[in-house]
Length: 229
Ligand SMILES: *Cc1c(COP(=O)(O)O)cnc(C)c1O
Image (cartoon, rainbow, N blue to C red; front, top):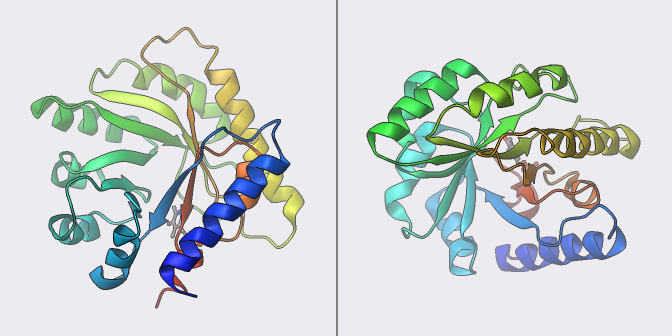
């Protein structure tokens, strides 16, 4: 199938999952096309078809691709962000999905303040707790949110997680449920600057499950563009 056809297919599966699980699914789900490792030609096909949200996991790739695409593209940084690289992307990213340390938050604050921008960020939570090194533990998130809320140039807008790489659905669902419950819990905190509205969860293998559990953003690469090299 073509990239356009794949996008239609993913969108219709998202809509079906929403219709099928109205209790927890979000009224609107943003599809982020994950373009890491891909060349400009393939990405352009998706952009020409109307996709405006692109996800990248490396700073270097955002820097290379950014000038090649229209300025209304929303670049999402979905991978681990090193503190010393914040300065390169602070004026380019629409949202950082991988906030996971106070050191990183302090650096984003400093760089964003310097250009008078407030950067929307999601806190990455490592619920599946596999071999992935990145993300806060569930128990750490509340204290972290309270600290992050004090940075005026960071807008904490929600949570992000990566589902476990397992074949069975039940453990994947459980991770997504836990992230939703954590978000609900955190939205009770009396922190006026924190808007806990986004749940970034679900990739090619599990985005339908994530939508059923309340994802507001899914990050899909392979199902749109085919396997990466
Ligand atoms: C690569 C990546 C994705 C997309 O993965 P696919 O399986 O190709 O859909 C989503 N989220 C993150 C954090 C990634 O690194």
